[in-house]
Length: 82
Image 1: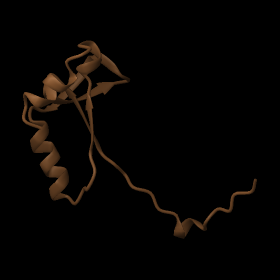
Image 2 (image 1 turned 180 degrees about the vertical axis):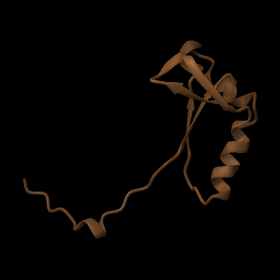
Image 3 (image 1 turned 90 degrees about the vertical axis):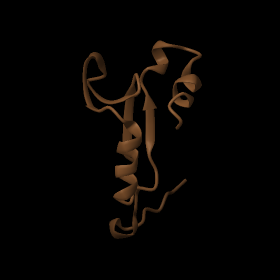
Image 4 (image 1 turned 30 degrees about the vertical axis):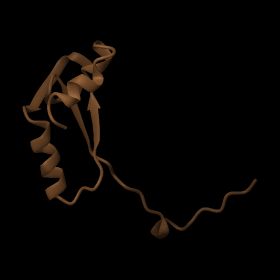
């Protein structure tokens, strides 16, 4: 099966920014290490609104707390009014 590629100027892609959240705070992990996290904002909703103000239409939210507390994912997000 042959696949025809479009010229580079006709190809498009969408960048979707992500917000990683631990215990309700926006974080960055160093090489995925929970012990090496940096909190860069206490309010994920504020960060999401900043992205929206910048014209972002899609946002990827990553709840990094959920894997450590199975079964409580929805409770965590719902309690913050998201």
